[in-house]
Length: 578
Image (cartoon, rainbow, N blue to C red; front, side, top):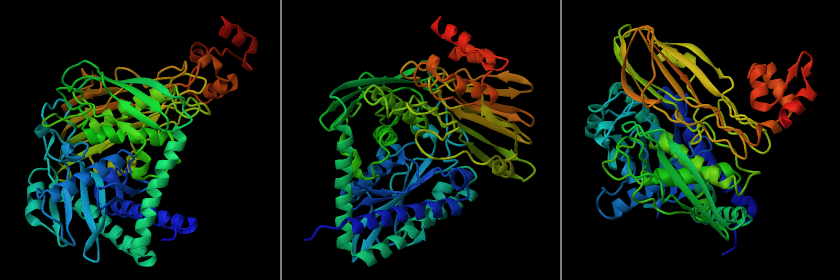
């Protein structure tokens, strides 16, 4: 058998990527919910028929779903082989959101569909979409004080939602009877299924053009090359053990921090990740299921080595020891609503904190590391209907060896963007009183952290309940190599003109609001990189000119003294040396 030439291999790789990108685009364009249609909190991919291994994923999909959908597809294949789940037929689409079967939290709902060729399954297509509600104790699913997964919403094992191309009315009725604003979810369900149908059609065109055997060989070669490339990037790192830590504010029930303790053992061309010493399983919803923990490690390494193509091969040199007995290996019935959006980012932060010691030129200081999960559910009297609003928000990225951190970037786990204010105000009975840069929130450093976001939203009419599952309210994102931490997350609820700060700082549920009440959020800034007194004075002068810092803050944080005509060089040198 002749080897594939480089051009054909590259063309097939791009074609598979395009299939996934088109699925992403179809999903977002057809979805009803702003969190999918505008924020793009979704992902689509192609997975191996034998073991669910990742073949390709959309470039605009959430990185945290890379390992998760690989894990869940493998679990589905195993359950079908064992006879636990009904075997597929052409036109079938499975639905699953069970966190313990390769998932995240219940709001991330996964669909999976086999692609058939000559009566056999060639591969699986799968996607995940964040549904704005899945039932449970609070609107939006982010129960900050849940102590069991049943309190978080409807949990679905893999079942056929579409049978031979038709939506199963009985399964749909069960779902609709357990979630809020059920009549609006049918739009997201149809969009999610349509994305897979489009993917199957486009993939068939690729297979028809190049042949099934050629594409199959290309997939195997791409997987092998991704593993080789990742090993080549790991190999130059000095052998040794690199340690990092990160902390979760609290679990929402017990007001005490949770520790993520990580040791990365580098030997040859592999990295072994060991979370022994991390906190035990917690009472509240900040437990992480294994699939999310694995995916968090993978996405962190993707941040460090973005040049490695997305493929199961890229994960082969990354060995993650199962963190049994810790809150990073949640078992039923531990609540998990905070695992994907918050704990995953703390895991990535621990990876960055360890790897910056090995690769200071490539790894950044800690990013904001919170998705800013804010759910508001209630009744809109003007429209005569209930609503569930879900807001995610960005924050600052950490500084790095080359430049300052990105301001108001998306969360570490994905590329989801905040829904436009205009869309949110049109869809829900709210008014954004403020939506601005959170000046000064980035950690000081030779290269400072990026700034977070400050927003304030008012309920215009009716009654509603607000819930938050955020993090970094107790400690800010870590600075590295002498850089300062970024500012912490801040939440204030104004009710009847009186300020209320959640006891757990950025976690609380069921806060009653009425018309005129407001919620104010300040998201974290990124950590600083390098000593602040090493920052170029002209950069500090520019930051002051742009209003990021006052002259007094510039002197206190960076040791730069400003005069009437700009930087006072002599005074700055004396301040820094003193």
